[in-house]
Amino acid sequence: MRPKIVNPKFQRKPTKSTKRIIERSKKYKTKEQKEFWLFNGKERLNQLYLDLLVNFCKKNKLKKPNILVLGSGRGSEVTSIYQELSSYGIKPKIDVFSLTKNLSTTTKKNVRKDLSSNLAFEQINKQQHPKLVKALKGRYDYTLGLMSVGYHTKHPEYSAFATASTLKKNGFAVLDVCKEFKAFPKLSEIEYDKLNLKSPETLLSSLLNIKTNAQENILRRKVISLFIKNVFKFLEKEYPKRKYEIQTITSSQIGVFKKEYSEKHNAPFASAEFTIEIKRLK
Image (cartoon, rainbow, N blue to C red; front, side, top):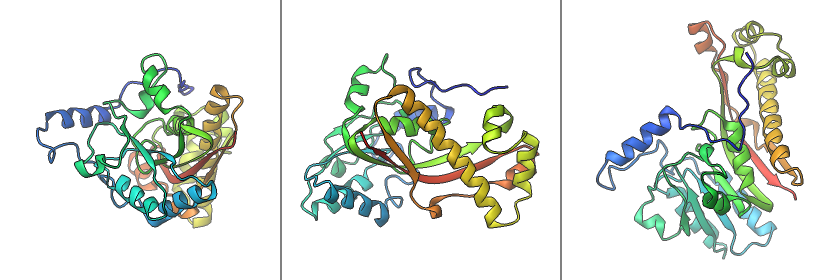
């Protein structure tokens, strides 16, 4: 069976997890009871990401950069970004996009626009959300999505495409990605060929028989390479005149394949966790 092609022009239905989060956020009454994200804007923003942002602004001589934070939660990372840039004399204009509006009162002071509207990032489309598309498309110097839209989705390639779409010329984005494969038989024969895997059975065998880090890294690199190629398919189709560059930031950001799941269920399953940087060159 060939996989469904995710068309950027079509709206996707919210996943079950998305629906649960929205329903949970609606039933809570007080601010303290509102939606709680696992990281809630904390922990995930380490000095590596802050340094990347500061160096980007300095290199491009941006005094008032337009920044978009995806999956901001209560907004702790927004506050950290504002304080870090302010210490260098940079006054960022920060917008946020989350599943629900959940910013703390303190964070709101540092945010220009909260574009959250009970809508998953992957659901946005021109036909039904023209104002939102206009507000996001090609508007930002820097977009940051840490353990957000690249994780909480069944279509991380589309999330990477949509993230790239938010960038101005010479814009830069950092996105955490979790690419899961729970049903490899749904992959097309072409995709198997690109991975040098003849069938689901050979893939399962490859997963279960990995004995060294070198073998694991080879398979992981193939999956990431295929992921990036699929993102470029979206970009080249939607923006034929634009040019982007995508690469992983560091190999240490890449997760491991979950061979135990495959052994337990006797079915191919793997996930690769990694961080990509996206540059819009023109």
